[in-house]
Amino acid sequence: MRPARTLAEALARDVLVLDGGLSNQLEAQGCDLSDDLWSARLLADAPRQIEAAHAAYVRAGAQVLITSSYQATFEGFARRGVRPEAAARLLGRSVALARAAADAAPHEVWVAASVGPYGAMLADGSEYRGRYGLGTAELERFHRPRIEALVAAGPDVLALETVPDADEAEALLRAAEGCGVPVWLSYTVAGGRTRAGQDLAEAFALAAGRDDVLAVGVNCCDPREVTAAVETAAAVTGKPVVAYPNSGEGWDAAERRWQGGSAYDPAAVHAWCAGGARLVGGCCRVGPQEIGALARLLGAD
Image (cartoon, rainbow, N blue to C red; front, side):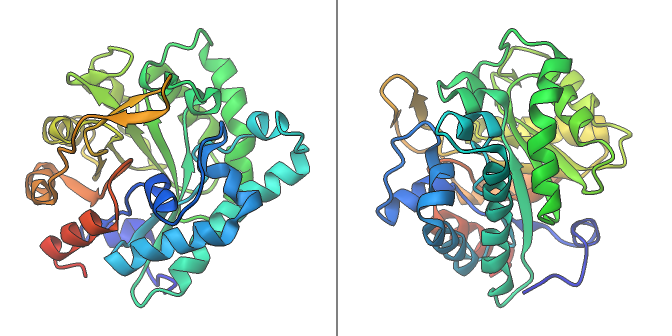
């Protein structure tokens, strides 16, 4: 269902349920993601699989769908011989596929266009380290073209997500400034700091006072990091907080596999919301079953 309200209007009244990990749902559907482009490869090769994955989260109760553009970049597509014009169309397709699933939903569903960090394009796990050796201006130049391509497709919000480094957050905010679409800024964290080791309160402060920033928070981190980070984000910025951790398993970039057991507990959503979270869901290795449980706990199903 196409929302009658803006996302900002909805957040003023409601806690909204995000989807979970797109890659794990695609794998559950039988898709092979052993590729540097990850789920972005399917934008060209199997777009209906992406739409089906979005639909699975809608059925679970998700009210916000995050597009398959996390690892979709002009540079990554160029390595496969995809020209810029075609790459722009694929980025736009990521929004269109999520929108199609949203429009078919029996409830209001918003679309968040994923803008992953520079490290996602490298496909070597460096989004969990940051500090790429690039300056803010270089990172801004990298991010701006795909932000423009995604905005042209008409998402409800840009998800500047899995950001490991406050310097990259600054670059992303500059690249999105004046684009006409609100953004949320979401760090990946460890030990109560950004993945690059920066003070989390200082990192969140970059978004304070910015009217274009709809929400701030954390994603793709251990679920046990979330409550403290949510409280810090709310206190520093006064904005709605977004929280969508992964399962708590660790990603081995060399082996290209997850290790350890899941620590994701949907019941933790109550503590997140008490701290200021208004957009809640899951990231890698969190599937429709967990999102459905979270939605039922919030009465959103």
